[in-house]
Length: 334
Image 1 (tube, rainbow, N blue to C red):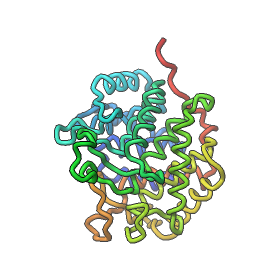
Image 2: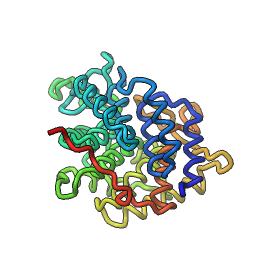
Image 3: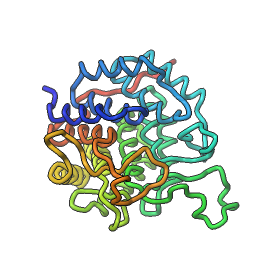
């Protein structure tokens, strides 16, 4: 029986404006995971009434491909994947997030969730793994924490002070969530013998750094800034990636413990149980991290947080194991 708790959390997310691929995929992927299949198919039908791949949010829109495969809409998913690959723009050796002229060359951590899982599930695992490793190479701090946005259009030797290349060089909470979740969702459909050792090592390094900075189960808008406010959306995204990584065999029980601690912290202090609203989420989408307690920078019910909270709840409290779902990649064309 599908979880009614997860359903209420997801209903609250759909009550918000769901106008980006990332918001669509966060909610849709969680619906499938929670076993809400009839409702999931209804929402997929809504998605198919409009274009799948859109501009300027090219990478963001491509995240809808994975839910299409989960829904059995294989021709539609493959058509969208082909369209994405024809229009894909590369910056710094990885997929550029948008096609807007004002962001030419900008590398976003968000893209790690928007593109690789959808590419992996349609059989393009080489592109998925290359992007995930590339994002880590470009955006990771020495300790493994992920930063948000880098301008790869300017050669480093032409930089004025080094820091001017960073549109947002903070260890943004959701940047880390996007990357660890992107790795977990991608490796889920790649046979374990084919896992890239460099990518697995990068995941373990980032996961270890994240656990170091976990505070009472939670993570902050800026992971390594103890003065930054808690961001519950980053918390559930990171915890989802760690829990799924644990189930896939990417790490030991410390990942599972961190995920449960995150769920307990969120449910105890940050969920309005009457409305199933996840409170104290950082607003978004956003370009530059503003780690402030000013109410203008915080939101309730953001679909990112609602979707990942439902997914995390399903993997932890409901005891669902991703390997039991039998999710596999579409066989590549011969």
